[in-house]
Image 1 (cartoon, one colour):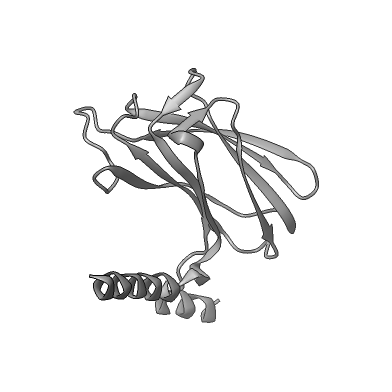
Image 2 (tube, helix red, strand yellow):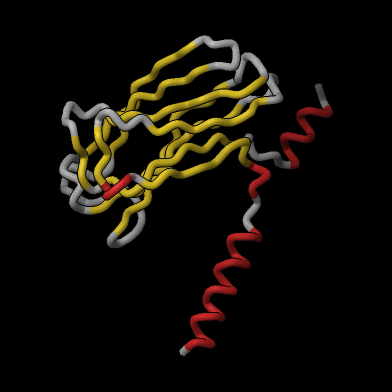
Length: 166
């Protein structure tokens, strides 16, 4: 039994370590205490931008359970730029279909990756993006964790050909 468990952990670690993180400028998840997201709990993510020419894909990673009481979630996205400027967005993400079926993958804990927008960062430096639940209720049970990812566009042979032809 111990050998099987050890072998499983080794396989898991090899899989995690072999993942290609080069496609991400930033990727992080934060666990929500007691799986209840309170309205006053802003979750910050800080990252550095060095390339203002690149266009990035921003998205969210939401992990939730079947006890989440609503079909969707509204999230406020607060961005603080390196120069002190601020921007605010409101995002609506469906977590369940109208029939009540989870839209993510998983059994007890459901994970949903949700693409939000493409963005080109205007200045270099440290950015802070904070997520805040905006559901008009003080407590949202069933929220396990929230995450932010900023992905670089995938480079393909076709992209390289187009760059050379410019």
